[in-house]
Length: 313
Image (cartoon, rainbow, N blue to C red; front, side, top):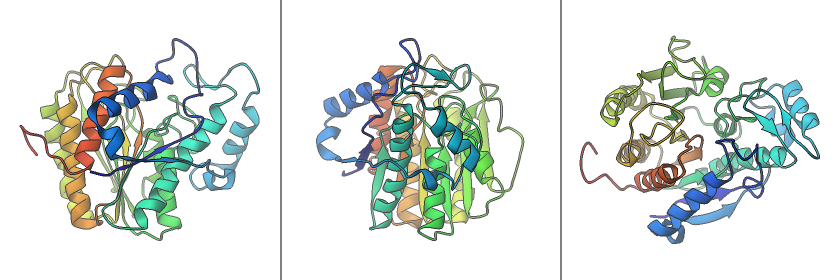
């Protein structure tokens, strides 16, 4: 298995405080599990470049982008809401995270049987067109999707979001866009308390109640695949959040590593059928450090074509 992992130079330096769950240790925990699992050696590793300011306008309002750039502090912390803050490395980290997702699209589109994982932070799927929220500043997966549509002239991009929190920003950016099919699962009710009402024909939502297990997730996710097979995507992009894990403190779902491996393997099979194996995945949530690292390893193994040994695969 060879998966290309994209990293951002300052993604480890963005720090919203010692008690904040979206912390640099998340990347350290993933790195530790990549090393102990042996995937560190079997994956390619690439340093991303920062996205250009003008490219961010593809999915975010110009006034909002300019405001984020102007608010970036040289020292101290600027809080944009109760849980989302900027310090002196935040803007560059956010630009590296978005740049990684865009550059991963370029790479997978250059050949067949290519899968990329963006090991970056801050996450992005809560970022609205004109607002930072939920630890997110720029919507990494939305920018990757827009880049695929606009620069690579794709006609069908599938967006998959299995973070425990609804990807409100991504949905609002693409609802009604016929070239995008967005499929998501999330706990409801839970922050940001959106996503359960049908908003457009290209949005497929599978909300889950607190306490739902991986079995319920698999049953709900299977509703995606009927639509995905009819859609026949030319590229699959994934908002890969791992905070639905049973050990995660931020929510109340009961997934385990096999569930992440299962859905990743299913998506790899779909990609092999319709888009020459091309997948771009980017890290979103996941806040129990051990569970996060183990789940990312399972995700990468599934994307690489490994099926789980037991259960549905």
